[in-house]
Amino acid sequence: MFCNQCGKQLPDNAAFCPECGAVREQEPAAPVQNMAFNPIPEENKEKGKKKGFPFKVLVPAALVFAVVVAVLVILLTGNRKTGMDTYAGTKDYVQAYWSFEKGIYEGEISNFNALKNGNESLIAYILDGDNNSDALYYMKSDLEPKLIAENVGTYAVSYTGDYIAYVQADGFEGGDLYLYCVKDGKITQVDTDVFPGFLCLSPTGKVVAYLKNYESYTENDLYIGGVGIKNQKVDDDGSMPVAVSDNGKTFYYIDDSSKLYIYNGKDSEKVSSSGCSNFWVNKDVSEILYTKDGKTYYHEPKMEDPVKISDETLYGVALPERVISFEDPRVGGSIIAGMKSFKGCVLELSGGLYWLNDKGTNTIKICSTTYDYKLSADGKSILFIKSGDLYRIKKIGNNMEAELLYDEEYVDYIVANDNLSKIYIVVGDEELLYLKGKNKTERITNDLSTDDYYSYVVAYNEDMKKIFFIENDTLCYAGTNSKSKVKVWEDVDDVERFLNMILFTTTEDDVVNIYYMNGKEPVKINK
Image (cartoon, rainbow, N blue to C red; front, side, top):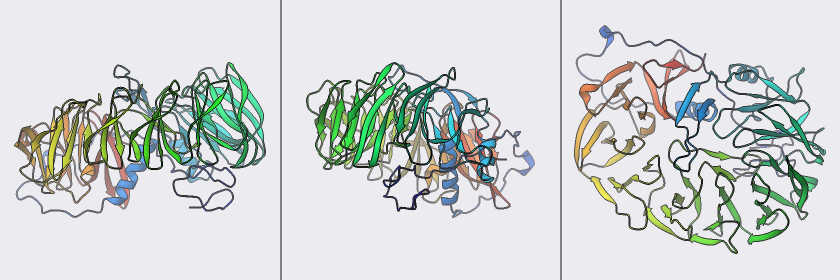
């Protein structure tokens, strides 16, 4: 892929252009619109013989899902009883971005310049039309665009969505850096002559890390500033921010050779030598996980030296389905997870899943897979597939034991509720079973419409306590047996769980229609 500003070819997974600092293009957002429920008439329900196995092309619909899941705006509340920020309490499904998408199609909105906060209740974007050149706006659940500033060169949104940082600049010359408070609209000027790129915000956004005197990736000055703190130069040898805390006293950054440093508000200290990458920080930036030379390390500000917790490469943190993770595209690779602490969590390493002990000093292997698993909502139990057999660990920890649940047939896919008390498995490509006990099952259907993309034909809805599945191209839901089956919609292409709702697609006249459902009535998303 090439930079949309200067045309230079971008490295793989680069979040910004190393030549001019422009942000890599992102996908456009999708609209949401209500539609009345359209149940299948009783007389049209299938009778007689069941259809044979349909081989469907699921990749295009999978791409549609990727876009929808990435851009749905939802007003959510957090549940911090488990120490994790979650999507547990959905208050309102917003008709997201019809005006935003319309602007993209009419060429008025920079579709690569849309950013969200952690729980996706706020989106910020730049209009670049004739009348709104480089104007920065944001929207929340009321869908009313609110102008922040014009002539904006770059911007960033904080994890909580409390603050939006932006630089007013002419091209890539230095500009003025501001913090916009979303709650009251107050604007704080942080600094001048700031390079319009590489902004790194603290979780609430009160503190921002930025670059001045920028000549290149290897020649720049690194600063922090913000609301309630003085501007301070942290380093002058060409550095990039990784993550900064709300008081500015914990600031991780790397130099041009990827050495990792920590700044305590007064002094900088080297944490680790060159080769540091794959950074994960917790929600208050009091812990960091990273990879160096293919090995994974853990560090806290109070530690003298980082601890090597694994000889394998860190891919990420295994988060329960509703737990927030928030990647800052202005930094590239730095992710704030909605977790109070990484201690006691599950890590995705190159050799499989591992448990990080409660002291943050060592890891214990759980299984060899990094994808065939389901983690409970509290992160304390797990289901996983090993050589086609299904296992469960009820309590992840020092003395955990894997319990064999099913080995009668090869298990292709597993679906479960949040606490893993209801387990469904796909076997033999077409058969969906409810697991009542060890090797004891109840058939839901043996005509599952699938090839290898099981995640797009089966999904569990936590609120309705039902399993959704596509049978002979018809979307159905059921409880724990086939007798409880209810038909929802005909000619359905794909179904997937997104947070606590169900998404499904249909195709009519070559147009893909997208619906969501978390009650009795499906709602159409796209117009």
